[in-house]
Amino acid sequence: MIRLADEGDAPAIRSVYAPIVRNTAVSFEDDPPSDAEMADRVADAFPEFPWLVCEIDDEIAGYAYAGRHRERGAYRWSVDVSVYVAADHRRRGVGRGLYESLFEILRLQGFCNAYAGIALPNPASVALHESFGFERVGVYESVGFKRGEWRDVGWWQSQLRDRPEDPDEPRYLADVRTSERFEAALSAGEGSVQT
Image (cartoon, rainbow, N blue to C red):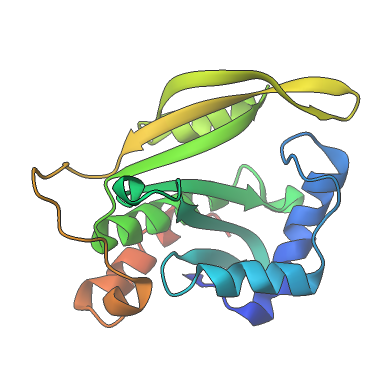
């Protein structure tokens, strides 16, 4: 089941994310956030941006979220996206399912562009994003130092929907949650997840 995350999911989300922070260069954080810090991240995203979790057998198998691309007003139709999957649930469609649902919700909200920063090398993440039509737009070379090496970050872009000449303002998550299309958007990726 793919659903909206809430602050109570913070310990389970942290359990997915903490090994990635500690053991890889995929995340540029030095230390895993606490449960309270993770709960704050989820709470701070609402009501504007979605955080989703994928539950398999009452366990959080992964999560995905969107956030503001940049602060200045003209960027407001663009979002940054991320997805993380627990090690024992990888290669089972969890990341794909989460992104399918996330992108449908973002379209429903009226966002036009999605961007993903990927610490390189990460062929699995690159393949996932490119399977959704993301195209590489550039690389920040040696932008971060983690695990004893300077690391590059590649940036990928995807157009979520047509870019209107005079776009309506993006809608808050709270505003689209009551629409008839929201549940369909939320469950859009569930068919991709192998249980």
